Length: 250
Image (cartoon, rainbow, N blue to C red):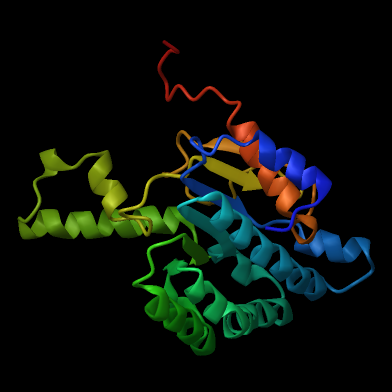
């Protein structure tokens, strides 16, 4: 793994017995990165793909098991149509170039979100990647596309309600594990670490249920400038935290 001097310094501080199992990232700041340089917003989104590739590689090299990336929210449809069309082309372009490397590195790709709401070409590209990597056992990369956490919870509640009405599930048997199982992330551990670049400090309808006891890490760096150094720093800082999950330290 090629590292700069600063990255090497951070890498040497990491305790590999305490790597966060699941890292979630809100990839924010593409538009502001572009505006700062006098470029159209879409230039920021394209530049952000490089950060995406670098982040997946460093997460894989560190031994992270799950990486959830907030790529397109249910609210993002409100953006200008030209920008939305561009964003819907990026997954197809990215996967056409990177899928073979991801397969070779044993990466498993999953989609979190309502696939039927995506344009046909976008849905087809992502579903093909999911199928071609479904047997892989390394890093799982969740692409949260056409994803909104409130919609996710509503979807889960409807499925549970249907089981109750059919008599296959008793109301008194519904608990946190039941709800978690019917979320898009069902079967995966909740994130240990949430990273949000760009300076914003809010969840933006992302993993509202799953982030109940997640450690948050914020940086003012815009997503296109987010590099290995930032990911390594986030992990180093995470390992300094005392996670009590509502209890007291022994």
